[in-house]
Amino acid sequence: MYVHITEATCLFLDCKIEEIIGKHLLVFVSEKDKERAQIEFETFLKTQKGDPGVFETILPSEEKKTLRIISNIVDEYIFHSLEDITELKRVEEGLKKNEAELLKTKKFLELINSMLRHDIINDLTVILSAADLHEQGEEGMLNEIKKRAHKSIGFINAIRNIGNLAGTKNLHLCNPYNILQSVCSHYKDIVININDNVKNIDVLADETLYSVFDNIISNAIRHGDAEKIDITITVEKQNVIIEIKNNGKKIEEKILTRIFEQGVKSEITGKSGTGLYVTKENMNRFEGNIEVKNVKDGVSFILKLKKVDIK
Image 1 (cartoon, rainbow, N blue to C red):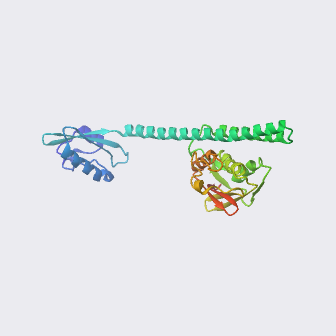
Image 2 (image 1 turned 30 degrees about the vertical axis):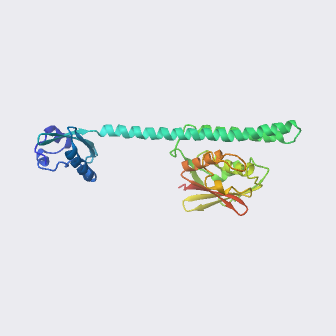
Image 3 (image 1 turned 180 degrees about the horizontal axis):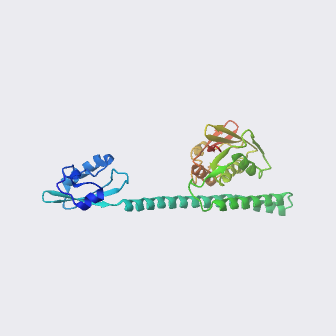
């Protein structure tokens, strides 16, 4: 128990000397920390070799001050030095938060880089192929080249608008029906049906939702040889469920459960799933979910996004 306390300590703790004298050594420790403090203090008493014991706790007061208690043993007495480290802890928490934000930003920029490489290279590949066909006299290729060029420009402009953002704090209202209409307008050579029962529902996302839809649809066409895609949008409680079903080739069972992992390759086509990896990462940023399964007549992607109610 305490047998002496300085006036400076009482001033710091906003208490009177008589309120401390005779009290337990851990009187300064908050209730939630007392069990831990008791164990650490007893360990210090048993094992101390001249080194001070250090314990940190939050004072049970309105100010929520963080206190560092430094214990030293001299003869038969235990001396406690008290240090207010509230500001130090605030700075440490700020640094940790900044570090976490920097890591989020780094991951986000890497994701944007992957998206640009993947999506733009796909369009450039189509443009080059269309240019070759045009030189061989194939009609309609100039329109395809223009269409793909405009698509890439639109994508770059959308990404540019969010290039300085990261994480989920800058998500905003997006209309999935309108975005799907925009994506599907670039695919005139196959049949794409979008149910129009849910047109005016908003979800929490950003401009990269366009890339999410585009990757799923373009993969179905390029890798699955799909000729028809059916898209349904439904609402389940606070979620918007979007199913994109194609009648193309089924996904190999060996890679079906790993299709969203970076670098996973098809044994048949040898193609890696970079686009689907990026798609999954974006869905995670939206705090949503995406699943894929083989169905009777093709492949079905099911996306779940948070519905936003406008009051």
